Image (cartoon, rainbow, N blue to C red; front, side):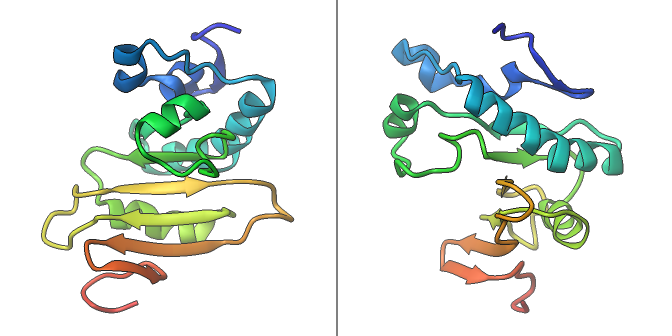
Amino acid sequence: MGAAMILSPNFTLAEFTKSQTALRNGIDNSPDEPEIDSLRRLTARILQPVRDHFGRPVRISSGFRCLELNSRIGSKPKSQHVTGHAADIEIPGISNFSVAQWIQDHLDFDQLILEFWAEDDPSAGWVHLSFISEPGNRNQALTVSDHGTKPGLVTGGQS
């Protein structure tokens, strides 16, 4: 398994495993085959369709995280990032709300979380998304802000 492994036409494994925290701390953030299979499904079912629709590169700010890395950054042990089911993304030049709204309206997902987005700064925050399997996905959309977590994609005080 090499870092140049191609998961889809526009995504490589290296994009999902890159971590400055892992590099600084000597952590091997390499997934095993089950996690790679999950990343392939996530890429095929959500990320590649997002890339194709918006026609712009999708930046993965957090993808796969081994348990040691996940713990080091203070995330929960049951994070979907650990199993390869989740990624945090942005598309430079496109509002994170618009990306999340399109995913909600057009794709099957387990969780879709618009995190720390601000209406007056469309590039603020990021979009967390996960994919398990079509019969197992919850299609749960949430918005997380400094004020807590709310169901649905919230903008301008409306849900």
